[in-house]
Image 1 (cartoon, rainbow, N blue to C red):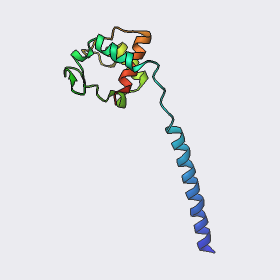
Image 2 (image 1 turned 45 degrees about the vertical axis):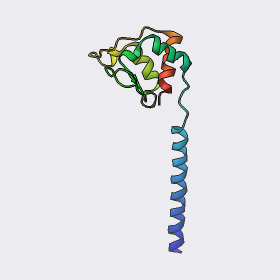
Image 3 (image 1 turned 135 degrees about the vertical axis):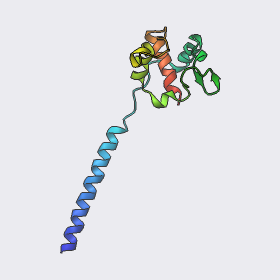
Image 4 (image 1 turned 60 degrees about the vertical axis):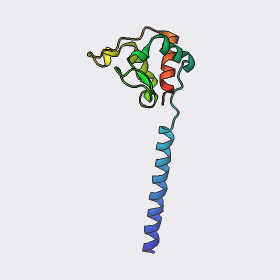
Length: 117
């Protein structure tokens, strides 16, 4: 009888743990917000703004600024919008100027950056 009580307590604890784990997983597996822009247009903007004069993607570009090859895996849409609009807000000593694009063009550039993983 004592053994059955221990087993049923263990079973209840296991079910509660699995249930809690599933609930947490369901919340954390939510898909990230899709970028508002078009990544192909963003790539064209990246080239037109001559970002590769300072940044490298893969083997193309310079090394003065941070490499952007996997920036989409480390930054999210909100951070990129804020940073690209005002890099000095993140770090007053930052040498990067604010990008000269706004609105939909900024959305496109961010979509391109997010595609780099």
